[in-house]
Amino acid sequence: MLSKPNPSSTTLYAASEELESHAVRFIMAHKLIEREVIELKFDEMPEEVLELNPCETLPTLFDRGMVLYDLSVIMEYLDERFPFPPLLPVDPIEKAEKRLLIYRFTRSEGCWYELVEKILHGAKKESEAARKTLHGNLIELLPLFSHKPYFKSEIMTLVDVCIAPILWRLDLLGISLDGKKAKPIMDYANRLFEKEGFHESLTFAEKDFN
Image 1 (cartoon, helix red, strand yellow):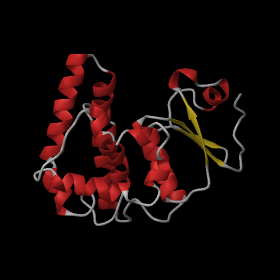
Image 2 (cartoon, helix red, strand yellow):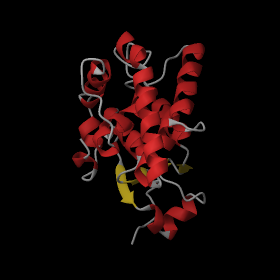
Image 3 (cartoon, helix red, strand yellow):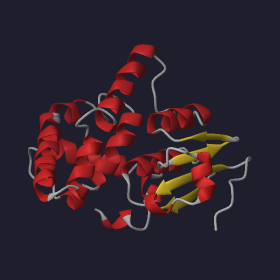
């Protein structure tokens, strides 16, 4: 039986295999945030969590008596609340660009997170179409993966945090990016996987994805 979170602690309620939860766990591990992470299933969310988040979504963050349950809001809050190392630029133009990229990959219609969901849980025809689309999107953006060490950036940002869980799941998604042509993507992926905290952010189930 879960109890309500301690108001003085930082508590994350997260799904064990879901992209958004993985992204938030990566941020928290990378920033060495003292935290309690509680793994839940969407269809088994206890009353204590539903009282905090009536939208019934994961991840849900509880910190300083405040409850947050939108991915972008959680990520930006953590980056500002725990500012080192920073994961968003200070310049407002660059910051806006990163916010748009996060929206494009995680929230917009046909976004990468939506495609992953369809690949894993859609009907066969829908799953195959989503797999083909995601593979094509990755190849199409090859120049951006090779242009700078991180996605349109010299340092890791929240955009990379959002992309990393997808790249970690490529085998699970049935997407192959082998070969010389795709080397920039795989080099980029390995840079993310080698980041401090990435492997610590993996749940027991996620360790088998790659």
